[in-house]
Length: 429
Ligand code: GDP
Ligand code: IMO
Ligand code: MG
Image (cartoon, rainbow, N blue to C red; front, top):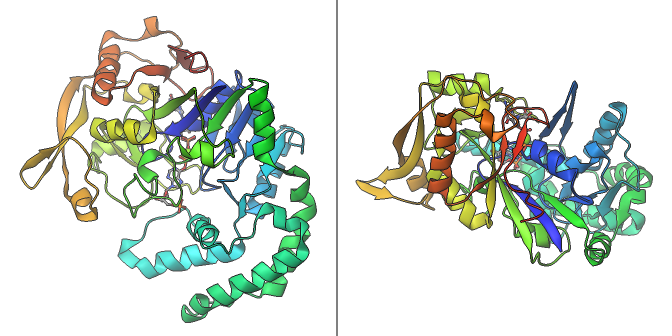
């Protein structure tokens, strides 16, 4: 089998959408395997900008695309995203967009609970995207969830909805919110069924056919390793596994022998929402990174927190996520900095750590230890060959490779899909 799994190596927004779009030219099918419309993947091609949240980025190039069973799907959000992209000229049909029939649905109830939980956490809030992601995954694991296939069984939907109301209305009432009306919610959901069901397929079987044809499969991760529910900065994480192994479980492929894992890695660091961020620059440097990198959330429009590259965290991400090589993005944002800092260790209670600790208090307390590297005054923006890069920029890249113990396979120097330098084809690796 020839497959590439793309995962984010930091806290999301590394440029996965751009790289998946670039790679999808070489792929036969593109598959999302976790997360939901909390993702925001931007693709720029000439004058056109596409923002995809739930839909696989392969659709921009008209590649057959699959939303796998590991994804949580808000049917209303799905339909409005299809409408939006169709208006932008993309062709999205039941032939090009396939949805795993065993994927979990996000209901309006989950959005309500997401918001209420954030209020209840007060200063401790996660800073979620408010899309109902966490509560939907909880219902999945709690064996209460309504799945895509249920839309073909109105009685199943009605029974599950009554069960969900009985379970969640206790909380909603205690919170002073309107209880969920299972009859009304069943009717509203079933009204969407005729638009969703034509896309529903046993995705595992479709992928098995691709596998037997030795097709090139591209798995598109959302979020990033440090937002992984096990390996991230828990509890300030999303509610799914974002590591490469999830591509196997969240698609129905089971395992992915021979798969190349590409970690999309920003040349500095950003984070949206709350939680620890040792190399954060809540100062003029952070503002400069944010302005040069246009660091505003694709989904929520929130300002992203910015900081220096954290090599300790990325090295850990390389290992926990099973990453083979990096696509280093947004190098151009660092143009013009006289010097660049890279976090190479943490100080905690007088000790130096070479890993990010697991404890919440320890994560909040660690202090970054920096190495300073020389910056470059030349522009790398839009560079399309390695020969166009200044020597100091190459030195920065080489030092990052050394620190995170993985090679740069692709380099991105601008928003446009063509502002990309291929070092080694991940499909041929
Ligand atoms: P994703 O969630 O990982 O797909 O990333 P987002 O799309 O949320 O955020 C990345 C942003 O950076 C988008 O606005 C991209 O258009 C932009 N971008 C991607 N690669 C580059 C790059 O190499 N240079 C610059 N300047 N912008 C980039
Ligand atoms: P892409 O795919 C950046 C963050 C939220 C919050 C935490 C939990 O575009 O990289 P959730 O709504 O998932 O329960 O929120 O995770 N988060 C992201 N941050 N990029 C994303 O996706 C994110 N998806 C979720 O900001 O801190
Ligand atoms: Mg994003």
